[in-house]
Image (tube, rainbow, N blue to C red; front, top):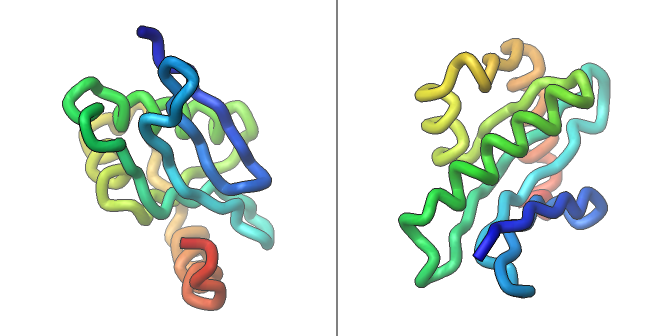
Length: 113
């Protein structure tokens, strides 16, 4: 089956859907203040769907979305950060001040997790 990726921005989720069911997602938020960024906080692949490259597809799409919007990605999620380190050509590093702002926003609002 083909994985469909759906951005549910209002819910802060990028979903991986297969056969009508969610098989993985990235939980994220948009940095509230300028400079805006997409901030990945958690990547999940559902049990039984591991090892199919779903997490990589999600992160690659997430970076593509950010690039299309002209904003950086702050990969606070360990998986997204690891993926970015392995794919520097697709995952430019966010400026330090943007990373600091993302961490401050997350600390101020744990519901973003």
